[in-house]
Image 1 (cartoon, rainbow, N blue to C red):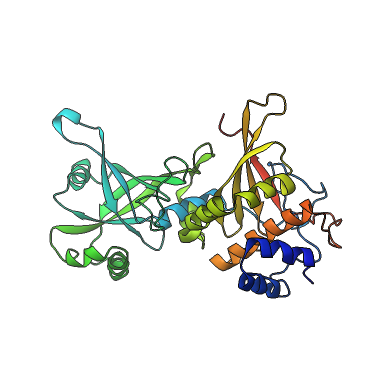
Image 2 (image 1 turned 90 degrees about the vertical axis):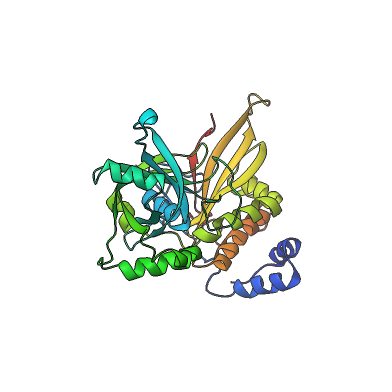
Length: 352
């Protein structure tokens, strides 16, 4: 497929000359906008625009909840461990401690703990049936992404279950030591100390929260164990930060031209993964201009991405099509049912 002069003009406004050239070349390659584009449908959520005609195999444009939960726990390498206190004056009260961890092959958190630490004492006194909860949150000091925390406006996950010491005869003992040493370099100095031991948390209940004003859900442990973490997880916060900081105008154009939202006041990207991006759009109520309404949208990529560069390319295609629509640029396949960018409205007035 050729790239139009108008499209090159759009890219020139957005990127440097080298980046435009690279993108123009890419438009002639395998990741180009296809002649017949797919339209995503997902029940019970309603599609934003496009034909009501159903495709036989609608593309998947959202991670499922087990994948999201597994992604949070995989990306984070630290969290808050809550144990039941055994102090006389606070018997049974939740006791929170900051802990580091890695995951075993099944996604079970593995912690290296000092036998004298208060949380370890609580675990030992609670016995093998005692329950603990590990809480991890993306984007903050509990994340390896290096991006500052944004409070409640980030995904988080709580894993509740039993915890037990791992003996050095365990089949995955060597793998655990290696993973922990790589993730937490200080551990090399204490792993062989008789005062430190590895503990494995076996989940019984998992609770996932997508962010402030976003849906939350319990995740079956078996589905969590079988889920695959998203390939973009470690870079998602950085991508979102750049989009929200440097591309406010493009996001506004996407909301008005692609999502067809009126009276847009503010647009923010709240999530990016291999299948697409989540957008939070705040607009003015047409009946009461002083009232703001916040809706959540999912804008899907036409193909799953496998790298940060792929994700940037797909986002640029969304921006490009928004620019084309505003400027009246059309293609031969624009009238084909299902030719629109795959998208869903996932929540209405989500912050009310």
